[in-house]
Amino acid sequence: MAGRRSDARQKMVSAARELFREQGYHATALSDVVQRSEAPRGSVYFHFPGGKAELAAEAAELHTREQVANIDRAAADARTPADLVRAYLDLARAALVASDYRQGCAVAPLVIESADLGEVSARSFTAIITALTGHFTTLGLDQANARTLADAVVAGAEGALITARALRSTSPFDAVQAVFAR
Amino acid sequence: MAGRRSDARQKMVSAARELFREQGYHATALSDVVQRSEAPRGSVYFHFPGGKAELAAEAAELHTREQVANIDRAAADARTPADLVRAYLDLARAALVASDYRQGCAVAPLVIESADLGEVSARSFTAIITALTGHFTTLGLDQANARTLADAVVAGAEGALITARALRSTSPFDAVQAVFAR
Image (cartoon, rainbow over all chains, first blue to last red; front, top):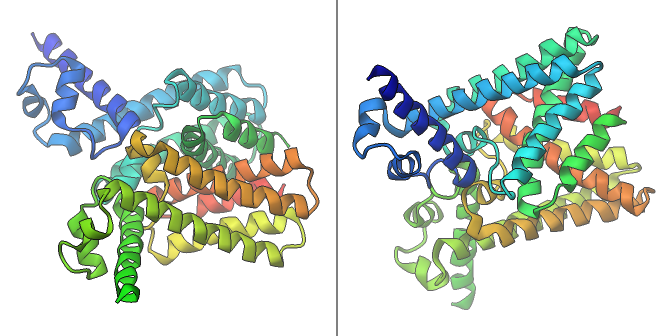
């Protein structure tokens, strides 16, 4: 029973993340999350007494955990910092293209739409940048250069997710990749 | 009378742009726009029969016109493509810092929050990228490299606006600048 309960909860977090990526935070109603996750109506406040803000915090955490896991996997295959930069940008690009330019970052909408969720988005980006920084040092960069490269590649991916989505083209990803590869 | 009418209209577009930059598209109610612009209640549908979507299209156009004017001014002072890259990133950074990390891009929320405004945001980013590309060719790059650099710097600025805002730090701008300056 506990297992099924937490399964429903997890499905709601996952559905919320998907909806935030597609249409942002404010346009996503709790009823949309219930519908997409096929959760029983009324269960959302049982699982998330803090409502949409709590759901957003958990969706951002899920997104960040997955991003960090992807980074860790890519780093295991990388021989140079440039390999990891390329892999990180490719992951973002592949997710956007696979969704036919419909799904962007799950955290960016929180930054743009809700000052109240500032701590949530700061925590997410910090975790992603920290993971990349760690791997860049393992791959040979000193701490300062590793942090700079991590800051820059996360900004590059976030921006490319926006302009590539608007233009329905991967050219911003190709361009960012070309600048990092110089 | 016509002058005053169009003045009120312009104030509403300007207020809408500011609100989109601060809190995004969906969180901005038409009543917020009326209040911030000190326009007479009820006048918004007179000036914008298409409602918020029409206001968003005009706000994006205003934002784009200003961006292109800023780019043209910066290009007049630039001796190299790198000068213009630096100036463009500095403009985005300065606007974010001047607003105490409260105002991001006015177009990004439309991409993230409203698929219906896809043409509006595509037109905006295309105009900005085209302006930069033109100046980069004047400054000596061939067309393909100019377009790549323009695509990359716009993505870099858009992404840095998001992560710098989340982290309340200019370090993403410094990092993006460092990568372009390599």
